[in-house]
Length: 556
Image (cartoon, rainbow, N blue to C red; front, top):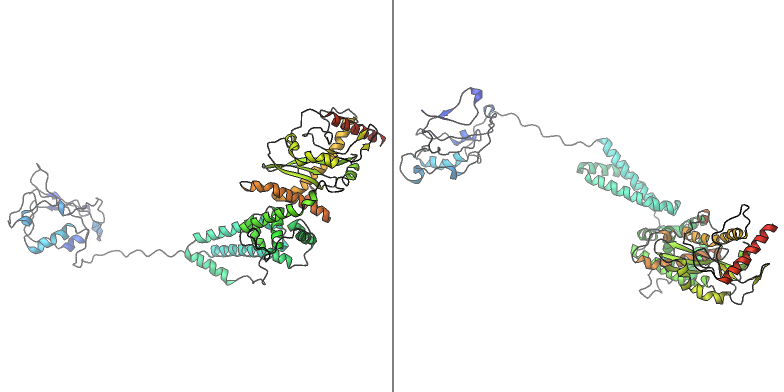
């Protein structure tokens, strides 16, 4: 009898199971016997040309019994379409079809056919025979939170919270520069701790928050809502705190507030003026100008609604300074030039009325300024293209056209070599003019360094230092001018530079001392020397001055 083995590994029993070619006519075993091994059964016809044999039943299962666990063949899924047509199902003839299994003709057997074929997919409604099985593995234990990690996270979060509270409530004990450097670090630490807690499991977050709530910090007494209000409500603070914050003492601050006459909230009916107290406007503008603080930081320290309001307050105050303090730059004011002459005479420059200089502010604009011997600005012109040379800027300024009226009808200084009218000192990047004296060029110093050209250049450089010091003090006092201005803010930079120079003059008028930090001068900007033609009258005046200085130096 031809047989075909089932592809079910029974090597443990040492034999193969064989089925007869033709299935006997007796009912198939119950479906639960097949379901014990969870088998997928495929009934297929024999290939044409093969010897007469029964179709193979391919069976692979994960048995619940130890004998069926060694099966390694892949399961073959099938549907009813894999069955060959059978006369038993299509007609009432009891003859079996060739190369197919004989199926019972009873109605119950036909009803059990789909369940038997797809027994690996769907359980039978009959209760399966209980088979010995190993006990299921115990569930994995819940992750335990290490107490060290919970304590560390609680300590870290508590430290950041206390640091933020100290920086916000006790910031009067810190200098503004220290606060501005500490704030971004604390905010970054707080964000990092928040992200770390968000990535932890829920039970760790709960434990950490519980640890924080067990020992809450002692609540601080109620304080004013903003740093500026706390500063105003602390009369015991020294003037050094005000100078650190606003670069001026408290009396000078309120004197400037009175001079600007900023509109009060009740009187500001126009939309162009902000409905803020005048002292808040001035304080916010000076703080930002002095420390280059971002608008969001200024808004938080002064209790302003938003950074946009802080920016508007800053430009409103700068415009008020340019309008109300413009008299401090009036070059044609009475005795303004006459008061500058004695200061330069003390520098061995007779009949000199001022020193002219240039400075770059970022990569946006060039400023031209005329300064007296005390470092007070007499004339300021800002907003020139940084690609322009000073020799091109000078003829286009107001000083160039008004110098004849400013220096006219002034007595001339009589020196040994001749008379010298009033004049301004000019840098080497400017042309030599009758009213603008520049240094000698290509001077070959003698071995004893006593040539008149070298002596004059030395005294001239000493006089030019006053304008460099003035620009350096403005830059150091108002650090916002050293920032990089971009976009639409570049248009406002000239007005801010003029406001800084006017505030510089105002503080000199108030007698505000120059601290050691401001006394350090910024490096002078380098410009290309002028190589054009020289003015004959200008050469004569310079030669007379050089001869006078040489004679004075020999007599000393």
